[in-house]
Amino acid sequence: MKLRMQCLSVALIAGGLLSGAAHAAGIEDTMKAKSCFACHAADKKLVGPAYKDVAAKYKADKGAVSKLASKIQKGGAGVWGAVPMPANAVTEAEAKQMAEWVLKVK
Image (cartoon, rainbow, N blue to C red; front, side):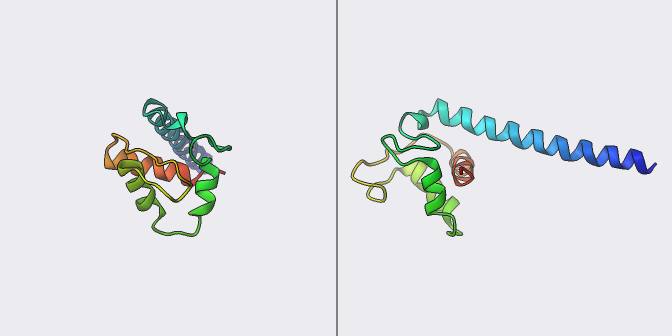
């Protein structure tokens, strides 16, 4: 019985990790489809800042997800230089998921 419970626990944890990885891959696919990676990369500045730099800048900001989700949807300018980020045609939920993903980049 104890072994069965341990196996079940391991299976549930592994399933959660796999679904989390699949979810992250789904967000990356959405970001690719919306051309986010045309201007941003995880580890280096392109037209816009590197995602790791965005994550570092907003690390201690408890409202970062909302702020970034709003910028993703509405666009923004002036925070990272003169080149503005255009608005993106994404849902509020997609923008939030994208912001959460960006904030996890290291």
